[in-house]
Image (tube, rainbow over all chains, first blue to last red; front, side, top):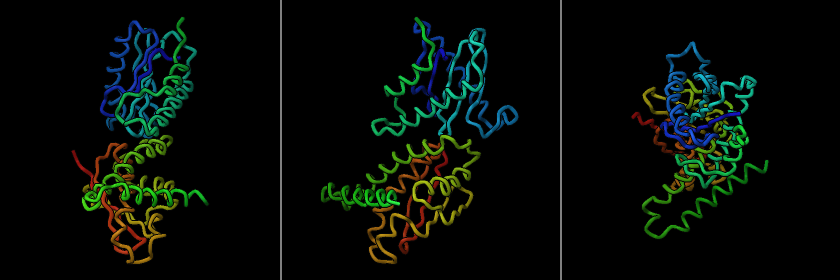
Amino acid sequence: MAVCIAVIAKENYPLYIRSVPTENELKFHYMVHTSLDVVDEKISALGKALVDQRELYLGLLYPTEDHKVYGYVTNSKVKFVMVVDASNTALRDNEIRSMFRKLHNSYTDVMCNPFYNPGDRIHSRAFDNMVTSMMIQVC
Amino acid sequence: MADEAVFLLLHNEMVSGVYKSAEQGEVENGRCITKLENMGFRVGQGLIERFTKDTARFKDELDIMKFVCKDFWTTVFKKQIDNLRTNHQGIYVLQDNKFRLLTQISAGKQYLEHASKYLAFTCGLIRGGLSNLGIKSIVTAEVSSMPACKFQVMIQKL
């Protein structure tokens, strides 16, 4: 269950960003922004030993005291960043991978939508619903 | 087997539809070709997103071109590119000896002057796919004898 999910275009501006506790949104925006540097580092050729070069899933980007940030890059250089609660230890790597797969599938559907111009913000309701299903429920 | 014919016929109708709806002056200016190419561009972007969903990350430009020649061409046209040549400085020539969209038109030099209309969409398809993978390019096509044709891809280095 994620706390914040962001889709970032290859030019590094956000196409879609949503966080669940809506009062501290700016903090999550800042976290996603700083994680972009880590993503770039992982996909560059220098970090050959760190990550399997052929994989799309990047894994844990960096942990903070109450959050962990995960990353995923598609072949079209669109980045997905997910922030989860650090106290949620039940969340395993496989679950994060499957969440990213679902995100990628929904993003592909958005891309094939003739009413969507690549590069615009994502307004698709189907994408919103899918993201809502992945966020934690806050009463 | 029917699915190949559907796209072929739709593509032919698309070309004649664009030309019919254009005004008199535009037919000479080549704006129709641009319209068809832009259609192919947007379709290429979406197609590439779908096809590269499960493949591993590409190592370099040559890897991407090989993917276009093999997997992409096979999925769209049910065959591979017959010949890929490069000068290793950003120019690639893709040769298809039996291009699916031209086989029904003629088997030699007849109707050669109309061939460019039918290649515009595919040029856009290649350009759109490459642009989504991060490569800016210019794609042109030439036909000397149908149904063989060559697509020339010029990579723009920024």
